[in-house]
Length: 403
Image (cartoon, rainbow, N blue to C red; front, side, top):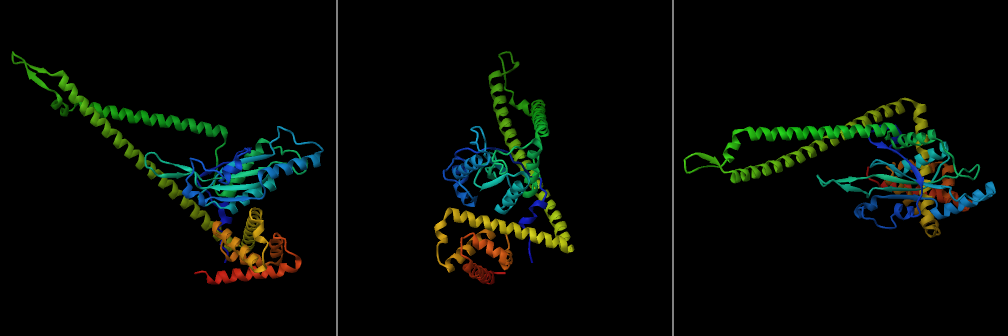
């Protein structure tokens, strides 16, 4: 039975918002994205959770773009052109590389934007100053080829195209779409007004509380009196003011402490309520999706085929990336090569939460096997043997797995 885990992301609605905004790629993008340098805002103990994919180095892709522009249009690429752009995308903790490949494919199909580098970062964030709790900043960097293959020039998009980018991103990542410009600014202003009103109310309550304490009989004990030579009681101003000052300091410290504790508790309660509501929504939508898929044969068949295509695309890109990084490891014996491919399958399976049985299903199809094995530059006589060898290794692995 297939479990369309990653494929369901587009059907999950969440209060967590995402957005995407492409800007010209910086020269040090690769150093940052692929962690070739260390930065102060990174947690090195979490860097191992990052994921990377690339089909070209930035400099190599720029060279290809320049050559293609001259070949297609007969002119050099303009100096002010921005043929390579980069976007930072807000993601969820469980967003996978497969989800981002699906997003990339949609960008290429609908907007002609071709993503050639992806980096998932899970080692950035900050510690809450009050609770000392780590607040991760889950995001992904998408580096894109902005060249129009029909003209050789840079792609031209209008405002509705950029709006469509937001829609596609939210749908593919199973997140809520970010608020559009003017509305977002208005809500930000309203939020600041509400915040200031809350601060004013809290200050007012604090003043009233202090006034109440001052008017109470407790403060009579702070007044120091002494009799003069005629027997009249007089207030010792210096000692009385000293007593009042000490008490006010104590009250202020206590008030600040209580206020901080209350704010922390309210914040934690709010966060838990949001998470709880998100989970309820996801469970409800997943139940409806599963019911629809299982009750409709055509829907199930289409969903299964889409999911298999998505997994195959993710596997192909993983093989291409591995070959780009370490081309020498693929120049080996047939048995070792089959083991390498099987290892890549297992890694893709683990990182993208894909059932291992899905890869067995993919390799059952001779066309899929031919396509995957040809990526490694085998001859025709080797294809069937290697395909069956990999399939056998996967079956043995599956039989050894605990159920």
